[in-house]
Image (cartoon, rainbow, N blue to C red; front, side, top):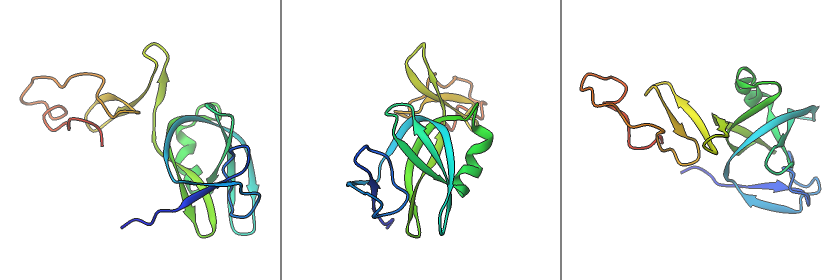
Length: 149
């Protein structure tokens, strides 16, 4: 069973990288969809991290160097859109990318592409943006699940 833990935040809603540094509230870990914009980097006694600003709230989150490495090639002009969650490594807390996507202004949805099934889906609901084709020999559509997991 995966251990659950709470994430420390300051009085302004910024995610803290370490317990006790002005933590005003602890929230159960959660997933969120947002666009993060790079702000700065920081070094600590035991970790190197990066600070990003959430577009939806203006609050700050911390990214570990390991998770930043996975995000770099997907960033555009210092920004990345996707589904995120928080994580804990040792005594430090951070935020990590679960999957990337982009905001489609025309349909007002966060959309992502699934390469395995060659189709776009709603990042929030996991619903496919198009119906599967009826071709019985189609490798993409024949095994496509009802929703993206």
